[in-house]
Amino acid sequence: MSTARRWAALAVLVLPVLLISIDMSVLSIAVPALAADLDPTANELLWIIDLYSFLLAGLLIAMGSLGDRIGRRRILLIGAPVFGVASLVCAFATTPTMLLAGRALLGIGGATLMPSTLGLIRTIFPDRDERRTAIAVWAMAFAGGAALGPLVGGLLLEHYWWGSVFLLNVPVILLFLVTAPLLLPEARDPHPGPLDLPSVALSILGMIGVVYALKVGVKGVDATVLLSCALGAAALAWFVVRQRRSADPMLDLSLFGNPAFSTALLVNVTAIFAFMGLMFFLPQYLMLVRGMGAAQAGLWMLPLAAASTLGTVLAPVVARWLSVRTVVLVGLALMSLGLATGTQLGDGLLVFVLLSACFGIGSGLAETLTNDVILAAAPSDRAGAAAAISETAYEVGGAMGTAVLGTVGLALYSTRVQQGAPAGLGEGATETAAQTLAAAHEVAAETPGAGPELVALADAAFLAGVHLVVLVGMTVGLGTLVLAWRGLRSEAGRASV
Image 1 (cartoon, one colour):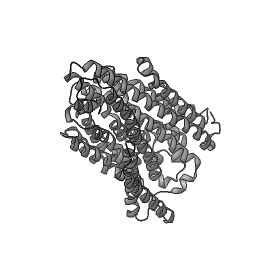
Image 2: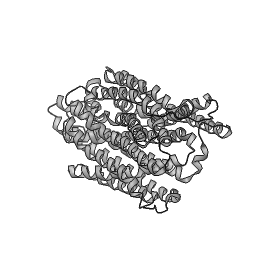
Image 3: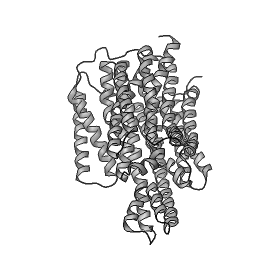
Image 4: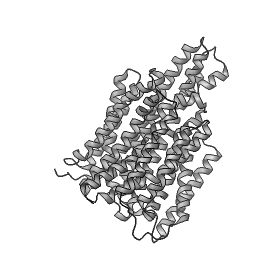
């Protein structure tokens, strides 16, 4: 394949990655409008935001293995129309249930797209130096798209209804369907063996069971959570046993014996965990606490997108002079510094910019090179499966970022609103205000007497929740930094210029 054709193919592969990452965060800017229109409960709202990443996490391993067998380009062309149809369902949803169904279908479609895009990069760019640059572009689309989601959503919401944020997907999917057959090569495992359907079922059941238990268990452990955790863990254990005994496993578990591979996955999980937690709270902070319109809030999210892009572009360049381990450690340190800055959020927008700049550059530096470590550890005929592991780490981290950090922050918010509610506010109004910050502002508008006091209380409670979230994220980031210092020793050699 010629040089021009390789980079043209990469441009085509970036299209679905950009859409998938935008869809992970675009709803964050639409939450107030969505909540006002569809009137979801707090739990429904978290599921609407989280279900997409939740199903991606459950299906990626199975879809990555399927792509290795039937062809990575073929599965891309199967998943793209599903993603497009799901976008239309979400755009025109009239109830929380309908929107949840659309988000679920988006997750299924996205699971067919993500592992194949990264797997094809391994095929298209066999040279590691070129592949690092290609992965940097891929990571830039992923991180930049997630950060650009609120900007794009904000601009659309200034002129259209909240469902318009999903219609952006449709023309891009159509462009992909036209160009992909012309520019993308087909790649598959030349000796795939039969598809292990029981293992596929076990991987899906196990991932969904465990992620569900973690998501719901943050708010309280009950019989359903325990049963889901037990079933998910048992399914994953059985899956592991089958993979160890199989002559042609769906997932090469020997990869996890490589400390660099395992540590790289951990870094990816940590970065996206903190990133998606921030993306849940920051747009609401700008629009509801700072009183910005959707478009203005989207523009204020631009520094995070720009910083993420800068970090991903710098990573392969800096790696020519410094070791991969050094670059990743610097990235994790910057992420933690940014999150530490977030504990002062509320003191002014300069703090917001510093948080965005440090965290964005740090996450870009950390994630870009770890993806190359993951791909380089796998044989070329298992590129899709290795990419699926990498993407599963992303999606589990993303789901947990929204679920765990979102739930922790909202739990503190709810507690403070209920404890400090103005005396003139009724029990029902207090309960409604404690659901979300948007709901509190609506209740305040309907109760002029207690309104100003409720707004001040709710805004302060929301900021307290954000401060707790960034502290949790910073702690996780620093712990990962220590583990990365040990786990990436094989990547500690000084790079040659």
